[in-house]
Image 1 (cartoon, rainbow, N blue to C red):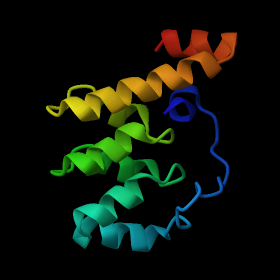
Image 2: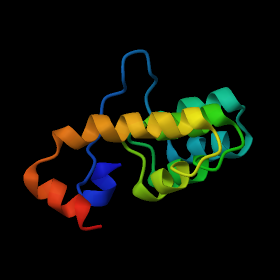
Image 3: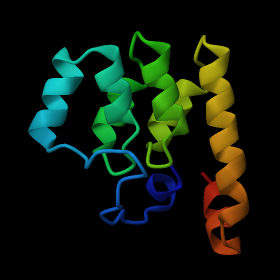
Image 4: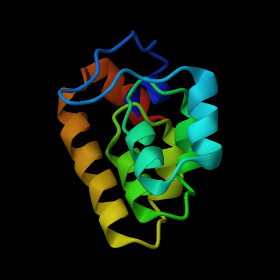
Length: 117
């Protein structure tokens, strides 16, 4: 989320423990269009997934998928703004937890950039 807001480039992050490598763009499109909720949530958990997928998943019918986006540090600000109004309390809580976890890691300059948005 904050990389998107602050304009930092994302590097190729290593997958989290137990997580598969981020699929190709074409494979991600296939999962987004035809994958089951479990596959979509797994895909939405990748921090280096293209932002357009995370934004798309922010309105997914399944709350587990939206929760994965809310938890994802790589989700774009636009997706987080959608999730902040989610009908599911657990999705909103996960988003608040992520923001609370990330804010203390900001430099003074980054904090000023964020608060001026």
